[in-house]
Image (cartoon, rainbow, N blue to C red; front, side, top):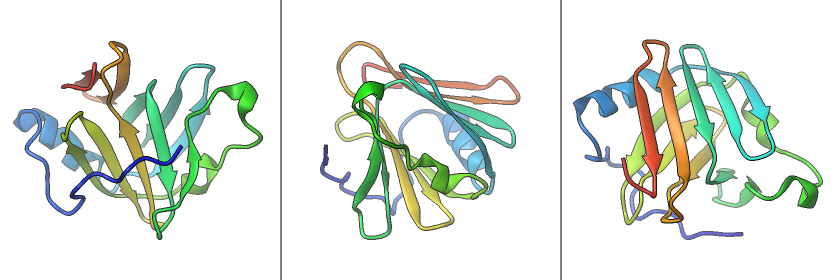
Length: 141
């Protein structure tokens, strides 16, 4: 599963309100302290936030090659998500063309994408320790 990269990673997205942008800014500099793999989702635990991804996702290396992605558990031979454990988030943005994709640039030169789509189900959510909640359902904030 190789998806086209979003048009722009370098600009800060204008998706959502100022509290959404504040939550993304607060994620920068936090370490990934745990990755939990469940049957229908993955959970990333940060120092003061939780990211739950129930939709499509990819982990890419420096040249853009997909090194891990969301597939059914019984079709998987290994996970490569362990490569980001202990690493800091360098940048966190939401790209909104055409759906809301969360993009995490990680200090070991990996990029994680949680992709929104229009299947009607929850795609991803970010919960801060202050209980601030960003929820992407059906591809939109």
